[in-house]
Figure 1 (cartoon, helix red, strand yellow):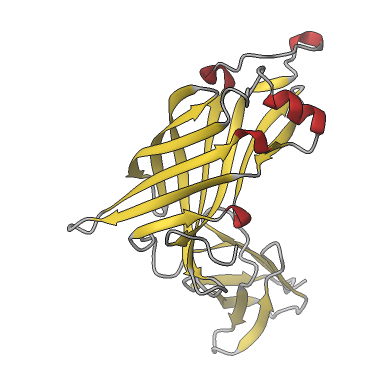
Figure 2 (tube, one colour):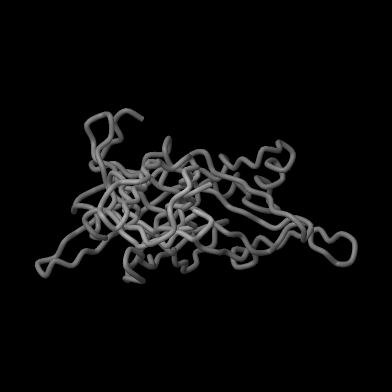
Length: 275
């Protein structure tokens, strides 16, 4: 195999439509290969030893260039190439953006028996993001989200029933989980920390989200969409969910910490067309 590379975003996502082109020192193209579904680029052509220029392109991303040295084996291990979104890392255009539940996910992962993880998701939720641009060009975003607690789905009916019971979510008393943001701070080139208050199981706590903005683009229904990924960790006892069954050797059946993962598409405007 003459060429192998991986193309990723800064958040580690595969860029599936990337194209890698290699040219020799005369400028002649010697390899052109497209990434697969995992962002992996390979080509079987063995190359003459020496330096080459590698150019990586993908729609929606700024091109990247690097130098690769082909060894006597005729192979070039380029490694991971990171692409940045085209147009920099500015926030989406000011205005109201509505969450699209059909193309978003709200999930949580908990440790099970100390050796594996159980993943669940909420199937019904709504929300909106408001981006305001000040005279100085700085933006402030407000996020409001509501989750239907009864829509918890872990793929196991008995487990879901228990999670809806008073031992955990207690959906009869607390049918909704809400999040209201209170501030937004830059945390990197395309990252922000969202400060807010989460109300879960009738308890309100301050919770920060680690947010990455993945870009903006048109959709097939004539709208404009923005994509975000956010994560946080919650401790069940902070929200008065203290149930825990202990099995052998003192190992808890369900971990006390939940990792929450949000993959969000938001549509510009008050409604979600084509959902």
